[in-house]
Image 1 (tube, one colour):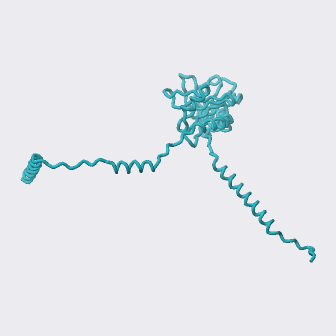
Image 2 (cartoon, helix red, strand yellow; image 1 turned 90 degrees about the vertical axis):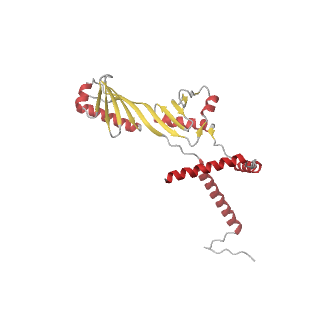
Image 3 (tube, one colour; image 1 turned 90 degrees about the horizontal axis):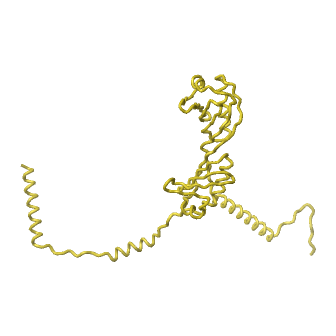
Length: 272
């Protein structure tokens, strides 16, 4: 018999082809699940920016007494020759010198630091100074993060004596300095790391650089073997020494009798 092909009718697939397609789909699903599990296993470390320090210049002389008298939220420190001005949004503090140099601290990001600096310049303009916002620069960034494990700081200092300086008598953390990107890290045994860098990008690069080094010195909790504890308890219970009861002498019986008679006498006096 000859095979007849009908027009407009799609031929049915063989069972072998269906099995191949099902196997490929299963393999793809398995690979996707493995990739998802691998992504879940990778630790997620949150970097928190605590402080951004920036500086700028007003390009004019500032009378600190006038700033203290007419400005809002100003603290005049005459001994130090400066003023402290504060704003709430973003919550920052500006240190103002008569030369026109101003340092802002307390911002949590570089854009917020620039917004705060421009707000301080605007307040000085409202007081009456000819302020020109110039030479804005982010000087220092302080960031912190916490590793999901504890760190053997002493072992790390022994292996990398040039990069790591650890003096437990002076400070509980080890100091690790990175030349490129420029950053200084304080590593603690609890797993917390404090990073000081010129910009936010350097903070992130420093954490990415230090993570594989710190992972080598991960402190593993000591696991207690329950079976050994059970065996030890059974051995102690089996081989414990039980002291035999010695017979009571006549002298001890007399002492017990005297003690009981004294108690009876005391009870009669209490009743009277």
